[in-house]
Length: 164
Image (cartoon, rainbow, N blue to C red; front, side, top):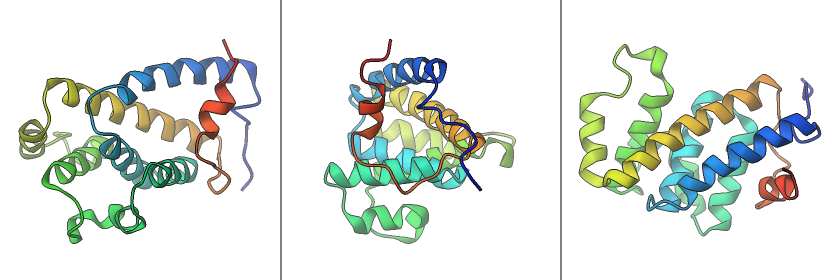
């Protein structure tokens, strides 16, 4: 299966990506820990089957010091001991907020309570926005069959540099 459309080779798509990235910068600059941002993005991308985003978030997390052990265990976080209670709450939130069609309630009250126990209002707002953005990014990349494997840390920002 070949990539259907080059989202980085089209002027309109690049303009959209720049604005999308600007929305993401609000989250990046938020008080939500960067490690949590990458873990949540990685888990949602795994669930959505987005090779490009799994590749990107695994490599970005590693470039920022995340261990291979933790990255390898994200898909099975419930069966591992390497995540904090706060990270576990965020990963549960990522799964439930990504799998909306699988449960009529979306994010459960139990998961929401765990998120609120560990994250303040600004961190919670960033977590909600992050999950919305990564799910949108996953869908776009899956639609065009954007492949994983060639991403290098910082590549996304470099592709957007100079676009208006």
